Image (cartoon, rainbow, N blue to C red; front, side):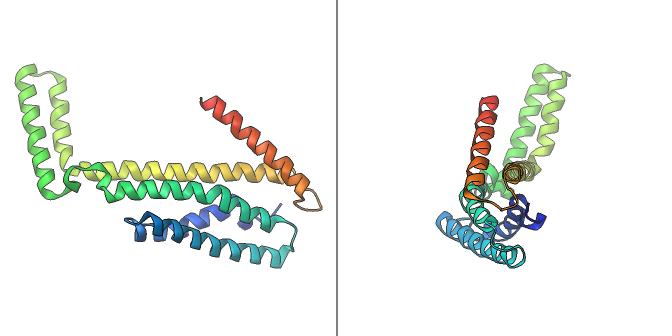
Length: 203
């Protein structure tokens, strides 16, 4: 088993921190983002592999780390990051991008609607709900942004959790001789079967 700092999930967390620091640089340029993410990944993975093999020797883990990070982690992160960049570029769907004029118009519209509903339903509780929503309207872009950022963080955590599961399966099949092709193939089959069963359960 490799030291914790070289395990798949730990390396993925470090990569996410580096990539998130640069992600907004390419918010309007998906092609540049893909190239930038790949460059950051290649540099970080090469450094991690060199450090690991300098201490532990070439036992095959460096190849596993490089493959799983480039073939499993990077495509998933890139897809999620580009989708989040699109949401951020569009101000999370806020009308007129959440500018002051848009906020004022929406707030006035929400208040007028609440007043109309109050005249129709008198003191029905639903009218107070619309007044409450009208009060929240000026900060709705921030609320939407908070929601989508939390959703993005949760999606990234799923990627890390999946890599932790893959790490566990790989460790089960790694013997004293290291990560041989035979043991790696057994681990891959187990991971693929687990992923297939998870997909069936979710379906």
